[in-house]
Length: 275
Image (cartoon, rainbow, N blue to C red):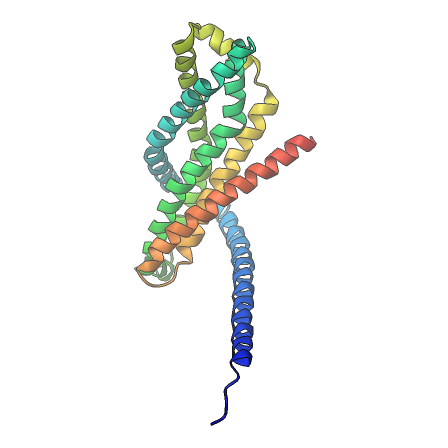
């Protein structure tokens, strides 16, 4: 019998495994760029629907109410706890330097500029984007989207554009609620250590805030809302046929939306630092 060269077989198997790994990596990055290109085209179609009749005002109000109503309690509790915890963490540090009077302003700047928008954006990415993705994916799987196209109704206008606009409007409002309740939590936490009147707290907090803090923070929350709604709609609208696609659409919408929130925040920080 011919003796088998085990060494050459191992080398060959390693080459085959390496080839498969390289192919998987190429397919992964190709999928990312293809998905990004389709997302850009989808965004262009959705934006066109904003300016094309019929304008579904009632549906926008309805979706805005549903989105806001589902997320308000979670956002409010999170904002309140963030203000409370952040104050309790920073008070001992500032008191060592005799700078505890600066605490309301520090908390206000931290929450308004960064923590409030980003944390609320992540909550909305998990709550709003996943809900929109699962809902539209279910409509796609059950062929409701196809039925709307056959009946002459524009699903991009009635289903997608309304939800994107609703999220764009509602997310900044939720951020304002989170910021306000975080300041309330900070006020209660400060009074747990020492007495501070409400007037003094408000004057100290808003005395350190300026337009350079408020305007960029507000603008980026609009972008947060737009992309949170858009990504949820995109993942649901392009879901495959099959019940497992609903869960996949919701999961991928959360991951993509959360990552997009961080990317937008980074872009705004870089722009503000340049200006």
